[in-house]
Image (cartoon, rainbow, N blue to C red):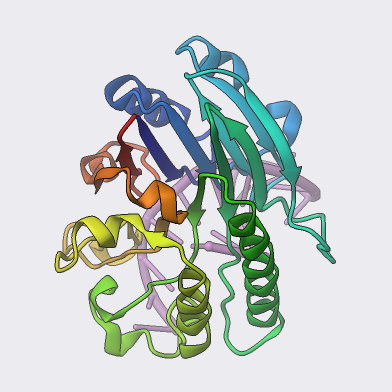
Length: 257
DNA sequence: ATGTCGGTGTCTCACCGA
């Protein structure tokens, strides 16, 4: 079974690209981020036409996350993290799908650092970690997937020395990511490709994709039992080269049935 | 500092956030 995560950067503006990729890749379960659409403008009918059911947590203009499934119904267990002091930002959606618990997330960008946005990012990360610990304690098979807005290590950045002060790579956020995975989560893509240079995002500016000046910020984290079923992972990076495409590429894992 | 996107309102340009 294939599970993917894709920051679409506007689900309606990128709809032709999203549909083209879904038809080509046919993942069983998909987490989407940056819908940039209110709930009433989510393109459910176009996805249904490709046999994908969907649940979504939208917001006007910004953020927004969704879960798609072509392997049975989506039972939403949570919209937003527990104890969220700012529920106006739609960044977390959790659902039971086909025997798995899926947490779809869009972690705050956090720039500029320092500042209130960076403080919000760290606070959001702390609430995610607290909830993730509770999830692990259930013993369920769980996937946390999305745009974490964190490059975990130097090898996840085309030029790490240039990103030391950025909110996506600052010591505090790398430490937060490391502390999260230390709970017992497996970074699926890195686990499958320990030494490879793998990126999931290339800025629109300065021909970043053409220069392969990328970042690895989209991740799928697996609970312990699921990590044992991991048989493959990768990035559909050719999608980043399509017309009217997102600045992110889809990221996927394959799990043994 | 620069550059490029989608979404939105101030609405066919100018902004915000990324």
